[in-house]
Amino acid sequence: MKTSYNGNAIIKLAVCCGLLFSACRKDSFLNVDNLSAVSSTTAFATEDAADLVLNDVYYYLPDEYDLVFDPFDNWTDNSMTGFSWSTSANAARTKATITSNTVFSYNWGGGYQKSSSWLNWDYLYTAIRKCNVFIAGLDASSLDDSYKEQRLGEAKVLRAYFYHIVWMLYGGGPIITVPDNRAEDGDSIYHARATFDENYAFLEEELTEAADLLPDNSGNDGGGRVTKGAALTLRGWIELFYASPLYNTSNDLTRWAAAAATNKLVMQLGYSLYPTYDELFLTTGGNSNNNEGIFYREYLGLKAGSTITNYQGPAYVGQQWLSWGGSTPTQELVDDYAMANGKAITDAGSGYDAQNPYASREPRFRQSILYNGNTFNGVEYISAVGSGYNEIDLSDATDQTNTGYAMKKCIDTTVNIFDWGGPSSQTYYYFRYAEVLLNYAEAENEAEGPDASVYDALDQVRTRAGIPTFSEIYPNVSQDSMRQLIRRERRVELAFEGKRYFDLLRWKIAEDNLNHVMHGTKVTPTSSGYTYDVIEVIPSGSPQWSFDASKNYLLPIPLSIIGQNPELTQNPNY
Image (cartoon, rainbow, N blue to C red; front, side):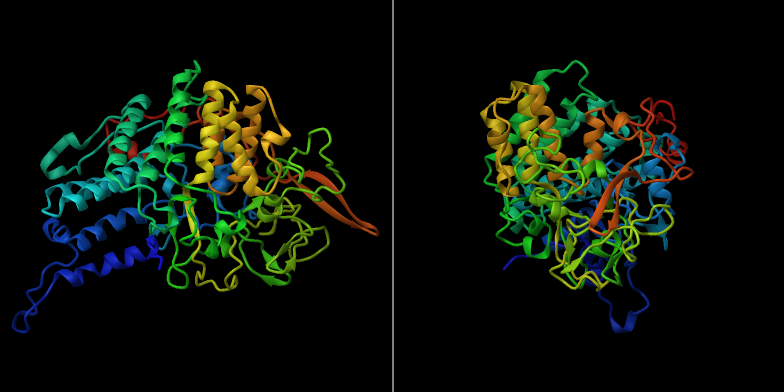
């Protein structure tokens, strides 16, 4: 039976853990210990107790399927919110106006609203400190050496994960590996930022060491715990980011070769693609037969289940309200889905018809995007003008779609979608094997050109998708052509998984892709069917997309954080 490792449940365990560590006599019931402060000795007295400490670190990983109405793909040209009131949505759209006082997440009821909270400097360094506290306590404990080695490997990967977000978003920060204590350490707790290259070297070393401490691939039966595959996959991704144009201005081919080599190591660990693309993201796909998951968060239905359906799904199912409509795909994304014959819609012989644009498209399109005439939960989705409930919002006045589309991928219809209690036990993937194949193909193409191994990796992704392979449709293409093919395939395969923004940054194309209004399709009924017109989705006067290349490739360190640490320096032009 599969063990479910659920981050949302973990914090509840942590709150209750004091009960395990305390006892009182009847005649001295007033002389109780302070249960809000468990000593390090007690916290690391047993493996179960130490796991509670580490579980709290796992809880801090991005939680994009729970209470998130403004997902990270909305920072990109993939999607946008269906509503205009979200301050975080407006900041994500109008990036040129971001300042060191900009707030990227909501704080409702005294805590972060999970939408984009993991982008925040203080959130990330809180998580890093939790890792440092765990590693220090583990090292000082007398627990079994084999247990300590594996958990140290897990903690190192988790710490590297949080650090790599700081590195990608902010250009790096202070490298802190022990828990600071103001009372004992004084002003030495004020750390200067390490350079971008120093941060990279630290991440490389950490993840290499961690990989040697961790067990091999556990697939989706690993209960969400970090394994060697997760350590190497994260390292391979970091190497790919480091090799990409944003920071590899001289196109040092050894960087690309290093990324290809590490991703190749992961490809030799025994992972495989789950046979059904859309089911991979549903409750039924997160099972022990799923060997695609490498690093992921599992949800526990009804107790601490995913709530993505009610925040990011279509606004209505038929006439019944379902969701806030937090994720509405753009025409820019829709146009990158291939035809069923494997060709891009712009390719000669593709068969694409602009007045019948959804006909004969590849399976991932209908599995990922709700378009006029597609079905969801057994009901036809209609966004045409005058259709009512899911009608396209041309004035940006309601929660309904501005683009004529809604997100279908990841919306779990194997459970009761109208139950806001979070009934879904689906899996959220930080990394999965399809991305490893795409990472390898990109790195190898840049290092060596489109050799047979590049085609083989891409062909696996396309075969699972149910469309003709690259070998069949695009044989013997140039390195430049293959680069564009890989980027398009990556966008489609990983849509709505929080990958696009970092790709736009590292390819240094955010200044082009995020500096214009996005588009959708207005579908208008006629006596004989529909007409289809591509439109701009945001009317004049509403916040428009903007990206300032002189500063927006990095986020600003919050002014409040700068004020707390005199050693910190701000990013350029903020």
